[in-house]
Image (cartoon, rainbow, N blue to C red):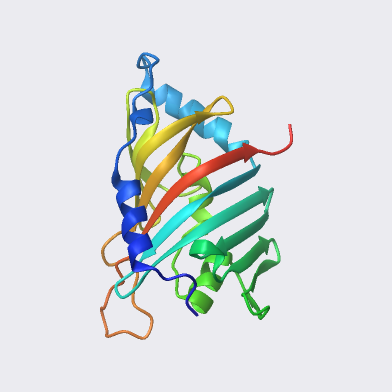
Amino acid sequence: MRLGRRAGCCAALALVLLVPGCAMVPTRPPVAHPEQVWEQRLKAMDAIDAWEVRGRLAVKTNKRGDTLNIYWRRQGNHHNISLYGPLGSGGVKLTQDDQGATLVDSKEKVYHDDSAEKLLYRVAGWRVPFGSMQHWMLGVAAPGAPYEKTLDDWGRALTITQNGWHIQFLEYHYTDGRDLPRKLVITALPGTEHVVGGKPGENENIQVKALLQHWDKLGN
């Protein structure tokens, strides 16, 4: 199944995502202790488990590239994720909770699996690390897993390496009293993702570029 494959749109979105924004350097002065600010940020973001995000993704693998719009609503352990191709063509709806994940495609065919990540890869061929990405797109590491990071002068992540992926935070924006990522690039580390049905040792080169255009905290 292919949803909204457009080479020109991929190239344009990739160019936009790779251009650093001026919001990367706040007007406020640098903090005295970036590590302390980072630790405070981890705790503050971990406490937020109800939000919605709208944006665009460019997903690229060895043999294909796709661009799509994303709407993601989280309320505790329940996730609703809608993915649509350019100009509204195609689309899938994903839900995930403690019982597993369900995907409904544009023809209303229903699929089930353990997680949204596994399900989307099995049905559409896209490897998007939703489990960790729900934390990365808030600018923090996923809890419970080791990671490496680099910070800027304001205690925000410039890069995070975790769970077989390397995340670059290209731009932040200030919204609802928080610095949140606006542009990030998520790249699979060499040798961590293998081509399903490929030759022995054949690795998949996967990159997800995200442009997060809207974020809202839900509830109090």
